[in-house]
Length: 254
Image (cartoon, rainbow, N blue to C red; front, side, top):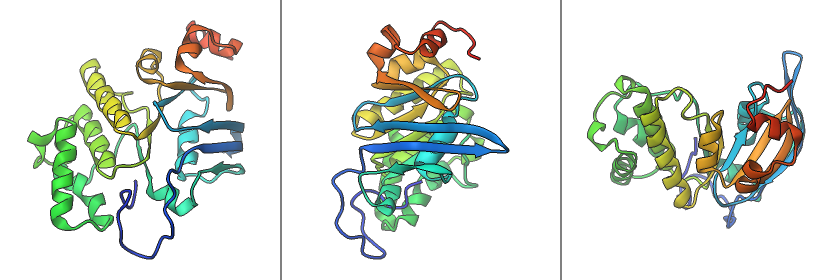
C-alpha cells in the first residue's frame, strides 16, 4: 500500500519529484521457491496508458511477478527498474490482492487508516475516504464493519482504499477470481474508472473475456517466461507465439 499520496508532504525531505515513475523496465528477472523455478529470466517494459493484463496458465508465475514488481518479494537475479528512485517509486504505487485483508473496523475507517499513515489532516482524510467509498458505490455502507461486507463489497472496498491514495501504478492480483458475475462487472467498472483517471493498472487474470474487455496490452506468461507482450487487439486477433495461440484456443499447455 502507498504510504503517501502523490504530492503529499511530511517526514524527511524527499528531494526533487520525478514526473513519472514509468516506464517500468524489467530485465533478467528470476525467482525460485522450494527448489522450483518460478520466473526464468523475464524481460519486458510497462509504459503509461491503458491497463496491462498479465495472463497465462495456472503456475505460470503471474502472482509472483506482481509481488516482485511491487517489492513484496526480492528478485534472486535481474532487476526491476522504475523511472524514479526506489523510495519514491514505492510511495506512488499500490496493490490489491485476490483476498484483501480487512481491518477490524468500519469500511470508512479501512479507507481512512492508510491516509492517516500518509500524514493527511483528519478533516482531509475523512473527506477523501468518503469520496473513495462513493466512487466504488459503498457510501451507504461507510459505518458497517468491513468484515461483515460481502466478498464483492470487500473487493470494492480494497479498491477504494488503494485509489484514495491516488497511486500512479496499481497492481491487481486476480481481483475478481472469487466473485459472481454481477460483482465482477462492478469491479471491472471501477478498474476502468481508475485507469481513466490516469492510474496505470497492471492486473493478473485467468479470465480471457475479462482481459479482452480491459486490456490495452497483454503480457503472456508460460512456464516462468514472457512468451509474448503485445497490444491487446493484436494479441487476441493474431498471437505470434504458438503457446499463446494454443492458450487462446483453450488448450492445456504442457
